[in-house]
Amino acid sequence: MGVTANDIKELRERTGCGIMDCKKALVSSNGNMEAAIDFLREKGLAAATKKASRVAAEGLAMVYTNDDCTLGVVIEVNSETDFVAKNAEFQSFVKLCGETVMEKNPETVEDLLKLAVKDGKTIENILQEKILTIGENIKIRRFKRFDGVVSGYVHANGKIGVLVKFDVKDADAVKTDAFKSYGKDIAMQIAAANPLYLEPSAVPEEVLEHERKILKEQIVSSGKPENIAEKIVEGRIGKFYKEVCLSNQMFVKDSNVNVTEYTNSVAKELGTQIKIVSFVRSEKGEGIEKKEDNFADEVAGMIK
Image 1 (cartoon, rainbow, N blue to C red):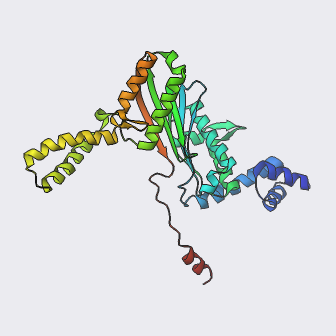
Image 2 (image 1 turned 90 degrees about the vertical axis):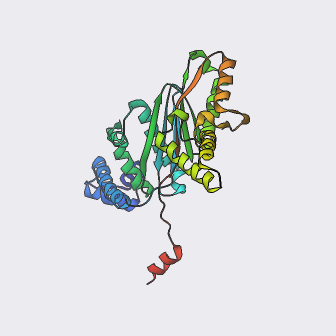
Image 3 (image 1 turned 180 degrees about the vertical axis):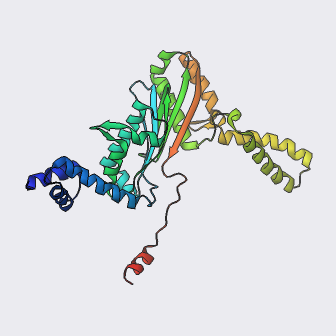
C-alpha cells in the first residue's frame, strides 16, 4: 500500500509529529493510519523515557469547579519551561486532567493515569503523546478534590491554585453574590498569606513545642529570667497563630478584622452560619529543586 502526501498530512494533523517521522511511521505500517499512530506513540514512549530525568518545575496550578460550585479540583501539572505552560495544547491537557478528577474521583496520580477518557486512551497514553509532540518532560504532580460547597481562585495565570471547602447552613445563601464574593476573598487570602493550618487546634503539638523552644531561647538570651520567659512565650504563641492559622490571620482586604471575624460578619449579613472546613493551596514547582545551567560552560563543552 502506497503512502501519499495526504496520508502524511493527516497523520501529522492527528499527532503533531514531524513530516519525516510521519512518513517513516506510515511506511513501516504499510500505510495503515492507526498502526502508524501506534508506531509514533511507541516512539513517543521511548522519547518520554529519555526526558523523564529532566526537571519539570514550571507548569500550571489550576482550579476547576462545576457550575453550582458543589464540586471542585485543584491540580498541578509540571513542564520544564514556562513557555510550554502558556501552550494551548498543554493547558488543554491540564484541563482534561482536572475534569477527569472531578468526574471519576481517583485517589492518586497513579490511579488518574490509568483512567480511560476518550477513544479508549488513558490519561497516561495522552500524557505520553503530549511529551512527544510538545518535546518536554511533563508530569502530573498532585491534585485535591473537594465535594461540597467550594470556592476557587487561580493567581497569576496558574502560578498558585487555591480551593476552599465551606459548611453553610442555608443552601440558598450559597447562591448569593455576597457569598460568592466572600468565597473568592477567602481563597485569595490563602493565596496571598499562605496559611499552614486552618485553626490553632490543627497545629501539631510537636510544631508548637518547637516554636516554644525557639521563642524561649530568644527571650532568655535577651536577658530575661527563665520563669518570665515562659510567660512571654505563651503571649507570643498568639502571634504565631496569627501568622500560620487561616482563622487567626488578619484579613488582607481589611486589617481591622481577622478571617474569623470577617466570616462571621458575612454569615450575619446572609442570615446563616458559615464555617471554613478545609483548604488546599498549590503553588507550581513548590519544593522542586531546579537545575541551574551554566550557559557559558555548556557552550564551552560543545566546542571541545
